[in-house]
Amino acid sequence: MKPDSESKRTSSAVVLDKRVSSKIFFHSSGKRRIHYGSTQGVALTLDGLETFASKHQFGALGQKLRHCNVSNLEFDTREKM
Image 1 (tube, one colour):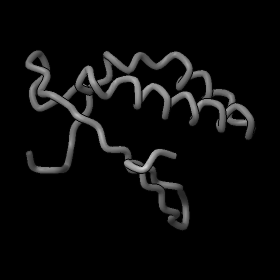
Image 2 (cartoon, helix red, strand yellow; image 1 turned 180 degrees about the vertical axis):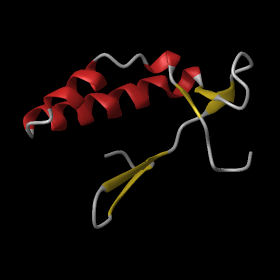
Image 3 (cartoon, one colour; image 1 turned 45 degrees about the horizontal axis):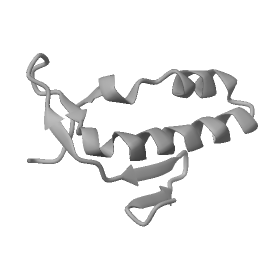
């Protein structure tokens, strides 16, 4: 894990908090996309998660993560910008 990442356990999950730069995507109301400068870090994080999932018998999740295109991810945020 990088210094700008944080992980914590809950009773039912492990939560990863990864800081990335994003920008508003104008074709989708309220959606954001990862800024170009953050895509490599996000891709490396997803690669690590894919490896973990595959090694621990979560093959379907590993396949989804392997085929994820970071530059096309759109998301909502709860944080006020």
